[in-house]
Image 1 (cartoon, one colour):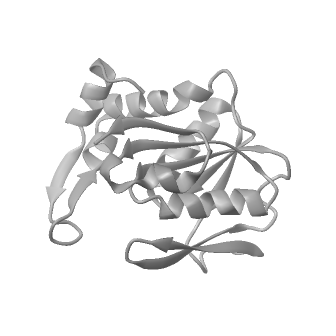
Image 2 (tube, one colour):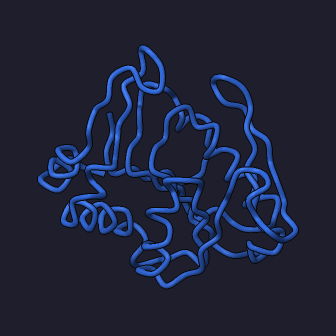
Length: 177
């Protein structure tokens, strides 16, 4: 997506927190954006924009900040919402995938019956860094028979190469740092 007044407004609402969660990391904190109704609304509108003319059948929102945008986007785009959680958080039968991160491995789960086979699934998260979590979400969609319609993030940290982990899936970001 291009830079302009909307993106400038969103950038101004995101707080930089040095040395969090560990020394040497510059954390992009979206909580001030969420506190600002205008900035929050603008962020959701920018996230929905690429999919208004061709909406997904389902949105897969990744724990935890992907939930913030996923629920609203499913409402705006008129589609179902699937939540991907850390292990042990979902009450029914689940399907899981483990994936590599820069500092180890992690696991995501969805309900085994959550993704309709053949459905167009949009994966939503707040931030793309190294791409491990998003890659795991894509694997869940694929393993349950869905078709990846796209992946969208509010923020992309371009220097960490996350986009390279996502194969040929269409990736959309609102802000790049």
